[in-house]
Length: 96
Image (tube, rainbow, N blue to C red; front, side, top):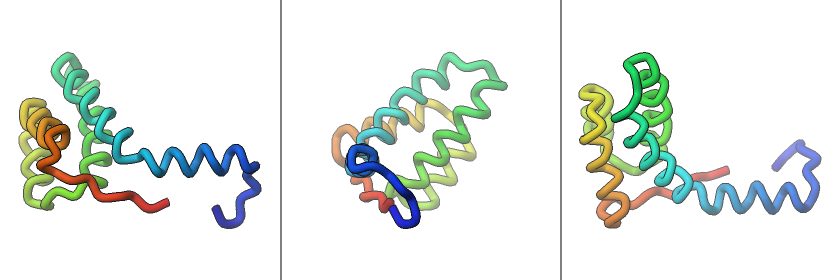
């Protein structure tokens, strides 16, 4: 937390956030699947951008990421979430 004047409490909150970032991303991705099924085309664009950012943090092959983003099918994204839940895909730890 270089160059920032955070209180000890704020530092702990930030640390806990990054310690749990993988679970937060997994939950957000799961919620995105649901909202993509219900979204209008205009809303879906923004949700796919969010999904792309989360997917980039997940340790999946680039070819699969490209396939998911090319198809933009919520069912494919749901399969990724299912694999995350089953532990087939391991999320890489994010750095601060």
